[in-house]
Image (tube, rainbow, N blue to C red):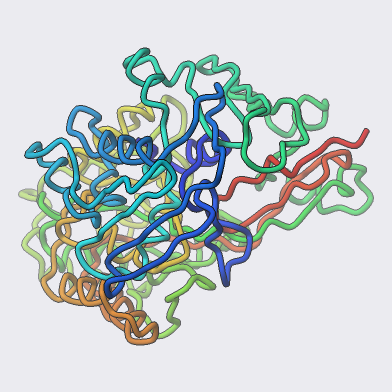
Length: 484
């Protein structure tokens, strides 16, 4: 059920699956609960051998049957997962479960207690990558069924840590999992503060051990005469793109010329310079720089107010008196909807004469409405890569039948390219398919890409050892220790 990066970062410390992402971006997939795997039958059959003596945090054994049950449960309509179809749907029979036509998948076979065989519908170069996502993590059936909807309050898990305490809006406390298969975590406990407050003040009062650095504090912490400067570290950019999303099925966003006008009316360089002090890079494509499949050859929709006005005049919604009301939804409650959103809205107003309404909704409602296609336009979030493959951007977000294509974008040529890429075994040709699809998506103005991240700053106490920052979200707390 995990659909956002913050939850993901905590979940991967508690739960685990067959394989995991490691810090080596050139060879990122590592054995986790599976000690090895083999691929046969033309790339369609994966056989995983589980480690000996695997245990859940409560001491129960972990078997191949637990994985079969977990995958089939994730796909079942009663679970109401918004991501199971996308991350497990390549497995033969999973789609039938998602559609409510079956309760088990023929493509998931338990050979013996330690051997799991997965059959996919076609050779997919990214399939192993998808198994690193929480949807493919193993659950304890008795734990889930005995506690029902409340099982997440006291979950039995397999990660380096287990959930010890969860107080909504206050904190999450993790404790070392004494039944973890690998070397035990050094830390007894880890606490995530959810109560809010000013992070910088909490850091300087030693209430928290690490925090990011916002624009308001950047100049001070970079001053070498300041005591806090010694705690400053560089953080690599996360592979993410921030954007404004459009519901292509709703007017006025069903008109490509109108969407293109909105794109050309936004000065992304000005936003990067003046709003973010160059801590971000203007995004003229979807795939971030440095990520597999990134192409500097993508021709983005540059800032051009005159062209924007021409496109608006050509669109079906040139007449403001008959143009549908436009509501841009952002997450939040009260206060400012965010400077970026306000700046984008102001650029549309100044350059096109388009007035929009900005609506703030609580985070849970925002995510639910987004998944159900209820939003006309949305902003205030970014899409971060789940694994190092361009499929996680171009296919997952823009294939017409993807469950995560929240805007309902559909282009037959894009579908043709991404479907070809799914089974293409030549890496260069495969990336070429994604680049061709990306160019169409950008030219169609399916989104308004805003920016990609660049190297940022964080603070970490000198007594925190072994903590690493990475571009992809990986489990890291097992290797952290305190040296006071």
